[in-house]
Length: 119
Image (cartoon, rainbow, N blue to C red):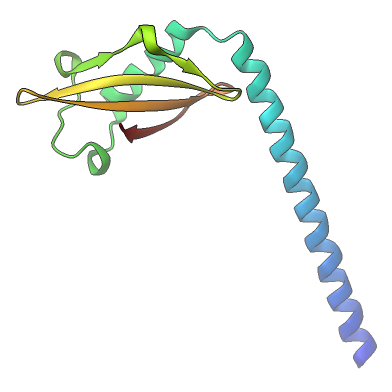
């Protein structure tokens, strides 16, 4: 009975280590794809993706009372920042005379993978 339990435990351990190894390999591959994509990325295309995402899919839970629309959105094209895997796109939203600054973090290998934060 002990040997059967021990072999099952060993099998689970091997399976877990295999899954962890595959996960580490996949993360490294994703990182390398992002780095390669960032080298030749078109900044105008990144800005367009952020604008389209904000105008069509803005998360009301994050943006709150801000009405994301063409007249209230200003993307700061001269201050785009590139990291090794992402492009950071600063932008402003205006609502009732109040302007708030945000940043969009766009993954280079998948321009629809966008995260937002208030600055």
